[in-house]
Image 1: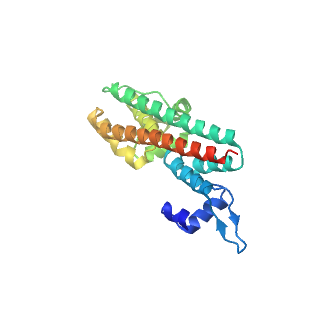
Image 2: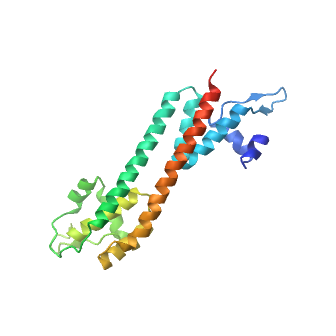
Image 3: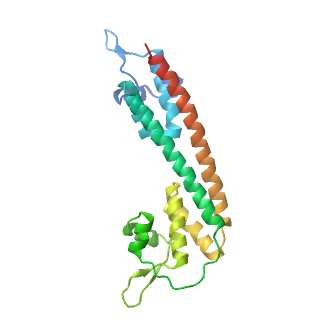
Length: 224
């Protein structure tokens, strides 16, 4: 199949895309063979261009909306995806600002408990306990009650973990970075991570531009 071969896909993959609503329904010959047109080629090109910037689920939903004639729904999905990218950029800026402001934290008694800290950051206490098990934070225990007590340094570590998780990093990637920041009292260990994060956001933004151009070409091709 020329359409599949052009994009390095299998014939079955193209059929699956059609069945999923990513491609418009193809007409059949009298013998039951699918007939793909230049419109299908534009649809496939648009979907593949949307993937790097929006991800498989959102790209699929965008194409499904377009193919059922719900263009406004497709545009809303694109707007939401751009909004998430903007949030991620702001998150990165917040991490960079937090790291610039990092300084040795005084060894003072903390009085923040797991419940209030979780509510402040919009997390579940179970998440903070999971991060503790992964070595991201090490709150001490009250000797009488056994409650976790988060010092100022612990809160800093939790905030950094929270920001990095939002940036898409795994716990096993975050743990050694926070451990280095904790031991060194500085931000140098995170500089390479932040550069990589910035590069990935930029690549995603460029991919969204490419996806928008290809989707626009498909929308124009669908116009009567």
